[in-house]
Amino acid sequence: METYEILRDLAIIILAAKFMGLVAKKCKIPSVVGEIVAGLIIGPCLPGLINLIIPGVIPSNFLSGLVQPSDFINWMAEIGVILIMFSAGLETNLKELKKSGLQALVIACFGVAVPLVFGAILYMCFHGFAAPGTEEFFCAAFIGCIMTATSVSITVESLRELGHLQGRVGQTILSAAIIDDVIGIIVLTFVLGMKDPSSNPGMVIVKTVLFLLASFVGGIICYKVFKKVDARYPHTRRIPIIGLGICFILSYIAERYFGIADITGAYLAGIILCNVRDASYIDRKVSINSYMIFAPVFFVGIGLKTDFSSMDTSMLLFSVLFVVVALAGKIIGCSGISKCLGFNMPDSLKIGIGMMTRGEVALIITSKGLNLGIIDASYFTAVILLIIVSSVVVPILLKAVYAKYPDGACPENKSEKAAS
Image (cartoon, rainbow, N blue to C red; front, side):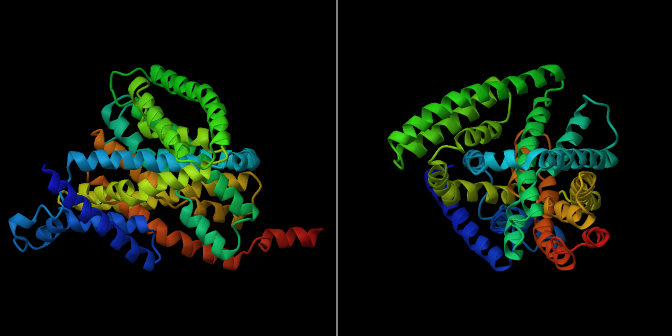
């Protein structure tokens, strides 16, 4: 690809992403959805879909779209993924995680485990039940991994608008979602380690544990050194530059020496630095690079890779069931265990609904699977559909449940007050 073609593609991607992101916000939908749609429009997906419905209506020289997927876009997108996960780590509130205690941890564990199992079973229902260790079993586990991710940003904004973010339920959802992402990344790391059919499950576990231990020990040393540098040179350019360097180093070490996804290293780098004084300053500076160019390339790139031409009745049915099972998995897992932990039924339902939203992490996991050849591009359809449906449905359901059962006003609470 010539240099001028790269510049043309970047211009189209960035402008299309911004425009469709603004359109999505006007429609009360996360801007990330608009950026994905931008990729569907400017890439080969939309012309191919139109040509599939009405053969011959699109000239052959326009079927490839304005922008085609390329190695350059893939590399830019990979950096975008790493920056997104680094920012997610920087925004993690470790004090809030400690305060949430055992309840949020247990809810998060079930919020990962139930969708993971449901997703694997759904895949096997379409492709046949496979024995552990086989390629089909690995693919089924990966589909389950996609369902584990929770994107709490939409839920947080909805709870803030309703005035319930600081309540017991709101804080439980927030803490459980943060822990959910940590567990989800660990599960993804383990599943990706199983990609090689000849790999030893025990060795995968050992490598994962060794990496986490090395990150913990190295993280403490890195944190102490960085804290001194931050105290001596606060709010200077070298702080975010060094932080970004640590992010890339950990990403490289994770992938090169431990066989673990680079996004795991980036996420842990963010967690290591999340408690330094200038964590928010680092996040702001890194986010400038992310939202200006790398993140739009990543999300638009998903749209570019999405292929509806291979969509058939079976895949359409799978996509619909994928959405239903993914939403039901969070409701059953999180609401069920919340009830067992002492929450009343309406509050348990609120927690389950609040954990249903999916976003960037689900896309990152799916993109990782596509790049590694685990799944094909047709599965992006199911994931995009899940993100759109959950983004629209969750705020509506939360508002309805809170309207009927405000905090402290559910039937069980009333009966307890009457009995006392």
